[in-house]
Length: 123
Image (cartoon, rainbow, N blue to C red):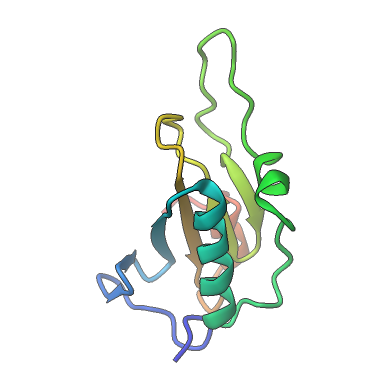
């Protein structure tokens, strides 16, 4: 069954990703960033999230990446990537990981889902 229909329970492994019952996280590392994004799009479609609007291309996705700060500061409290409830596609903060993308899917069925997605609820 697709994740959107049956969300993985806490501690459950599903397709090499991990779930805490609230969010499911999976790391994609293709031969290029473009390939990683292509894999994420295919995965989301297979798992019932084909209706979620996504950036058209990897170039569009990169517009959501935090700009490299010339003063050496990093942003700690904002997501570094694209967010559209219930998914987040994030770039690693370590820019040496050039082909890596993180996919986080939030469980839409849990109480106060939207607050959790936007980081407004302490857990």
